[in-house]
Image (cartoon, rainbow, N blue to C red; front, side, top):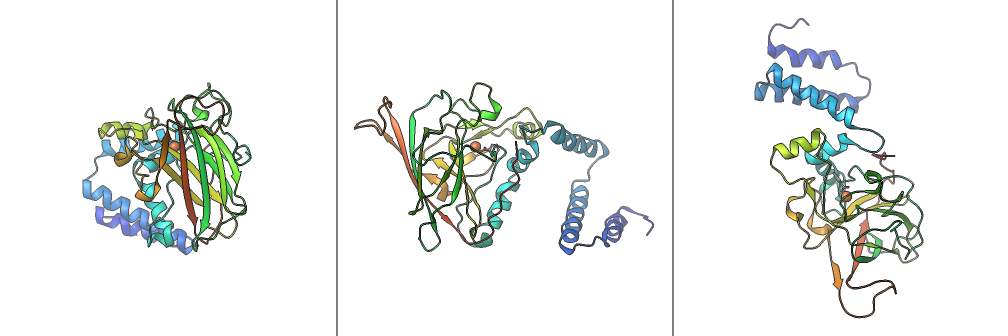
Length: 297
Ligand code: BEZ
Ligand code: FE
């Protein structure tokens, strides 16, 4: 068809795309084009604004490398990652879910660590944390031999891949649940940290006068054939920014009870002063046990 007015563009593109062979991919592509055209019309997008937007997209690409995923960061800060997560977990969004967004810092192949072992692999500040976790199915039965990746930022505010001062895989570990679905580890109490703000995703956040901070949390990825892979985070109760997480990851179910201990016998001889414990139970649902594509290497 030959286009005469702005109203002819969307139908012309729909027609041009109609031979895409896969019905689902066609549905997604057509919907995307319809919405992006509707968006341009709604705001009466100017040529300068369109140019700026394309530049922004290109910068998301140039900012991304093996150690940094600006695309995920943009999706996270716009709430898209949390929306997709909540739509696809908790019985496809119909019940409360234990899932949360993956974020840009999961690495595959974390070092296998014995249950009870430490994931502190180089000197790291912060009070000791002793975490005891349990993985149950929806009927409350233990899930043994589940593979669980744990990762978190150093209280200095950076993940090990962002920070030359930390050992490779510091504050990362891979555990397996025992016959009762349990595993435990030692680390340091996580602290809140700001997301990277030097790229376009951070620029948007700062422009909107938002705090670029995430509340203190641990990340978990629980994987076992027969169960939907559970990607989640457990937040520190009472942490700053719980109600304004820059990536919208906090749900009530994910606020863990991190207990502070100041008296009594510490769980390890080298613990001086205050330490923390966390007891938390995850429930996994039946489903596909695929792994996400690692955002970084
Ligand atoms: C994280 O918690 O690792 C994270 C999630 C989204 C954006 C930045 C960091
Ligand atoms: Fe994190």
